[in-house]
Length: 269
Image 1 (cartoon, rainbow, N blue to C red):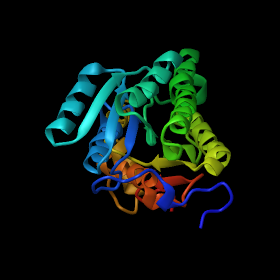
Image 2: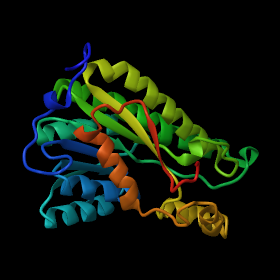
Image 3: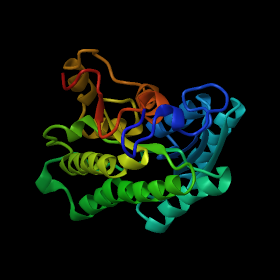
Image 4: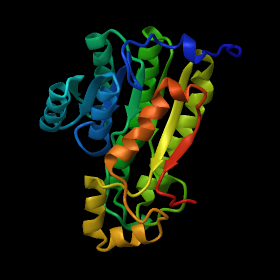
């Protein structure tokens, strides 16, 4: 029996077919590569109709074609998280294509060269703020509006970082923006929970993506340093991070909201 203003799993969007996200329309940012591409593929395998969004059309086209070749339903839209109109148009495109929006994974982010706070350029700070924080805020606002207007209930997951949960001297601007994303996540969970819209975040640790490769070029030996202190003694594959996002977006996580889930191989244990 639902609490006041709440929605039970049984009252959620109708499910057709099988799969963790069957019957849902999913929107994924940063979907051209890395964790976002892995998430788009996984969400489609789990039964969702997926709209992929990112800046690089060639990457989006490749991933979309892979999903379709595997029997999934997917389309893409070019989207720049630094442009408000672009973000809103991308979210609205999901509704235009599929008639509704149920879930969204706000994964897209940018990276700035590692180094101490006083060596971060103002331009780099402004850029990481615009994409990694403002872009997430813009997307969340548009996604909530789309869910309200169509599916009525749904879920959002924001991609944060384990580096948001501690001091981050090598990536101070990146860590600060991701910590702010955690705050947005928790605030949104409280605001929209009564409507049946759940909001969570994941905090990945060391993951084999282009971002970590770039960091490694600036900090040789980074992988060895990171994995030496991990209980699992290895980096994550992007697919492992995507699995946690899929679960949080699914009805199986129907009583989970306002959490920042560590997916870090035990880094913060």
